[in-house]
Amino acid sequence: MASGIEPGAELLRIENISLSFGGVKALTDVSFNIKRGEVRAIIGPNGAGKSSMLNVINGFYHPQVGEVWYCGEKRKGAKPHQIAHQGIARTFQNIALFKGMSTLDNIMTGRSTHMAANMLSQAIWRGTAEKEEIKNRRYVEEIIDFLEIQSIRKTPVGRLPYGLQKRVELGRALAAEPVLLLLDEPMAGMNVEEKEDMSRFILDVQSEFGTTIAIIEHDMGVVMDISDRLVVLDYGKKIGDGTPEEIRNNQAVIDAYLGVPHE
Amino acid sequence: MFYRQAGDFKTTYRDDIQTFPLKQDRWGYYIVLAVAFLVVPFFINDYWTSAVMLPFLIYAIAALGLNILTGYCGQVSLGTGGFLAVGAYASYKIMTSFPDLNIFIVVLLSGVVTAAVGMLFGIPSLRIKGFYLAVATLAAQFFLVWLFNKVPWFYNNSASGQISVPERSMFGFAITGPNADAPVRYLFCLTFLVLLAWVARNLTRGRLGRSWMAIRDMDIAAEIIGVNPLKSKLSAFAVSSFFIGVAGALFFSVYLGAVEVGEAFGITQSFLVLFMIIIGGLGSIFGSFAGAAFLVLVPVLLKNIMVNWLGWPTDIAVHIEFMVVGGLIVLFLIAEPHGLAQLWRLAKDKFLLWPFPH
Image (cartoon, rainbow over all chains, first blue to last red; front, top):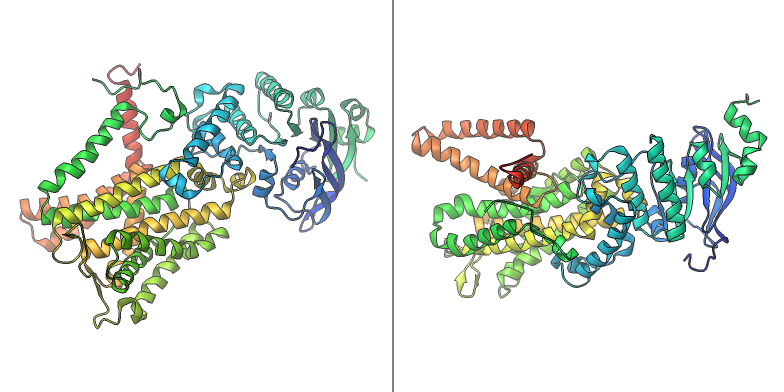
């Protein structure tokens, strides 16, 4: 689907999205786009609607108003698992790994969208099922190498420390070979060293796999360094959009972060 | 020779993902299979077959089935008794409608019928979870038992309301009916158990099994990374019910021979199989075997000790048996909530390092 989109061309367009839960307005009339191959950051104070935005992009929330255009096509009521098949993968703010499974199985689950053997073949473990398993295992091992988590391959993820769990979750998202990767606070709760590692992985993903990345992150130093363009949300409204340099000098953004009283 | 991982190098992914990656485990498995198929049949008598081996083999199949649904896919079901009944009545109707059909095929077809019924009762799982789903499956339990009592077509209008199995044979050996020999019945059930355990293992280590476990561990995340919840939940219900249907067909045709639905397939069966997988270990193939063995063997053992060795009256023995088994279950859940399978895993981990654990 995304094969026709050149790097630098528009991959995803959000048009006048409004989303509310009962009386609470999570997003009001937000529009922006994401270009293929860029790192696009979504920032804003707590409760600004950043995670809701990602949930709209991967189809978990359906906005009451507005349109989502992906690869030049308008999206109509697709389910999250269908959107995953279109090449959008994500990680979660609170780690959402499959706790009872090993690192390897978690990442292999991320390959689901690339596997299609029928149930009979899986039941007897011959033919397509076995071939498919081995072929995808090879790809998963590449990701394990890339993220340097060889030693915890067969450890149940519930036993891993926080930083490694975050890394495994990134691995699970990468396993889908996504066109667009959504990262929801990948560095929350990490120390400086872990943040450096994670930033390096994110930039490597962008350059090695050519993945487009949308990232939510609170650490301004990191965000300004690794992103190409930023969107700033506050109280569900877009208050800024542009390169790190432009955002740094945007009065509305400075006000939002420094806490000027709202009239 | 020690139980060791060292020196057992894997050079292909195919080797790495096999069921028993350790050489010693593999040999252990072959030896158990050989003993079960080649040695046991020569020593088994009628008492051992009916009191121990057949219930163990058949409950192990049912436990495997429920473990796929509850242990792997996280969907709690209290409808096992009802689905066992579906398997039993399906096999009865198929046997009496097509007298020439091979008994092996009959049992498989009963599984297929149960799979279809199971999928139907699995539809609520798409909207509800946990305890609420358990209650919905409870409805299946009561409805199915009621149905088989109420509609005479299911028991071919027999006067007693019971169904009793006609004689069927394979390769000249009677498998069902009063003329079936103990070793033949044992081997017939054993074949099904080994085949289905192998299928369960294959399904749970591949894509389908991972999608079940993903739904169990974190259903929203699973859907967002591309697992179709509808397909994986319904397939879990289908596969699980297939296993339980096969168990039900064997329970009726090979083990009991004649059943009355309310007695043989009541709610106690649902709980019994559920206890088996909880004690054995949720989400473990070995756990299904261990749980079935525990709950089949312990009562027999207790009864033998109290009645035959100590000479106590039978009625007292029965009550004490209830208390002891119940106490053991409680003790077990406190000491090792992950079941016998976890104990087995821990023991193996210890042995891998024994005698120098540091």
